[in-house]
Image (cartoon, rainbow, N blue to C red; front, top):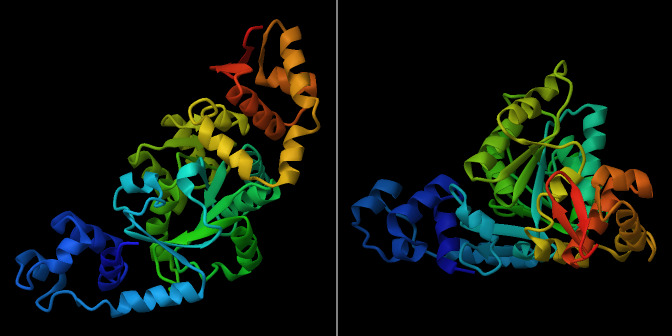
Amino acid sequence: MDKYDLWLVTVCNFEPELINKCIEVFGSAENLYTTSFFDAEKTKLFGLKGPDKSFNKAESLIQRCEEQDIRILSFNDEEYPDLLRHINCPPRILFTKGEKLNLNKYFCISVVGTRTPSDFGVRYAETIGHDLGKCGMVVVSGMAMGTDGAAHTGALKSGGKTVAVLAGGVDRPYPAINRNLYDRILENGMVISERPPGFSGGKYLYPQRNRILTGLSYATVVCEGKIASGTSISAKMARDNNRDIFAVPSSPVLSNSELPNSLIADGARIVTNTYDIVSSYATLYPELLDNGLKHISKSSKDKISQGDNLEDEIIKFIENNGGFAYINDIIDGCNIDIGTLSGKLMLLTIDGVLSQEAGGKYILIGG
């Protein structure tokens, strides 16, 4: 942990724009600390008094985090999420609680949507979270009511990992009604924030929170939501940071279909099932997905396997189909659910048994 970075965020009162302005002007927190009191840029940023050069607040914060088993990651730490380094206004310090996951070793994907989804929206978000988790992906969301909670819940049910990004401190589960979900996430994932422990979140902090949420992820899946909404801001942030966007289509007569349908019209990838997401990355990031599968619970691995014969059954079906088959044909022919099949296809692809082509087509290598 960089003590100067921690000092910087305390003197900037944890405000990301001021923190990043300081880095932009001085190059590093240490440069700012050692610059002359009379530096014109410093007085412009902090006023005539300049920043407090005492490390007292930083040291007090370290002690508080140690007492609460909260981890502090600074920008230049090896385990700081590399994807975050390349977003607009990256957080200089992250506080984490729960498992000590090095997210650089996992494939993270965020799932976002309205706090007031339809029954279909809740079920679909949970299904997406479950199937992504079963396939070894880490599901990232904001632990809010509605879509966020459903996605986290699905990932947890699969035995996979999930990460909640909070607007307030990592020791303050919000909303309070999700306390049980928060506790479950700590057991099989972690919570992250750029705000210190004890800090109360607020609506004005959600855009700041969402830039981290989408910034941690290779892609963002947008479920239900309106065009004028926080979910819309999250989608824009993902796009501005050159991340992939997937959207779940819905009936145009429903108000919560406005955003995903609009995103699809603008070029977002359509999600008809979880395979649409997994198939985009299975061959691009096999080591990350494989690492995720290694770390899910044994019970989930058993469910993915569904016995020793499932892989042989898939291979035999493809072989009898002329050496290739499409995903929907395999689902029907082998009577396998999409989450289980996606996990097995990914493993067979990683092992070099199958090759994947566009449109959900799998070819038996050597077949």
